[in-house]
Amino acid sequence: MRKVLIDKYMSDYQFSEKHEIVINASAEKIYSAILSTDFMKSFIIHMLFKIRGIPKFTIVDLTKVGFEILEEMYPKEIVIGLEGRFWTRFGSENALNKISRENFLTPQSMDVARVAWNFYIEEKTTDQYILTTETRISCTSKNTLRKFKIYWFIIKPGSGLVRKYMLREIRKQAEQPGMN
Image (cartoon, rainbow, N blue to C red):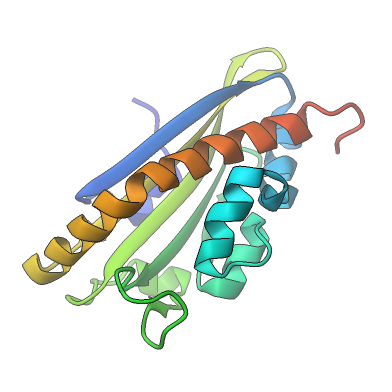
């Protein structure tokens, strides 16, 4: 069984979603593409995130809306995290909590859901890698779990679609000749 950083940040969770894609590029190119790809170039992602009020969307831009880069293991894995009350109106006060790497490893408040999301690069053959993205969500109270179940039921199809398009955009950028 492979050891991934996301396990360090969230080994106990109630919801998860995982997608993968094969990319014909080096791990370094893939990692660079993870950090620099503008996902808003995808029409589907653009429309879904416009609804949520997110104007620009790279992994680094997510830190401006509450996500925190929890840990990186270059060029293998990056883990980002977030906690909040996702079922409230996005952008409203108390919807999302900025959380530090240190706080992410402390016990979770009972009234929020905590999210850990990674991108993991695994060698398949020489210059061919599998890029996996996994999202895990933890709810520590019955009330939070109930609210998040409803929210997840509504957003899960769009969330999965976004992840699949993100992987395609990363592949497109990583496989470009001259990509650093």
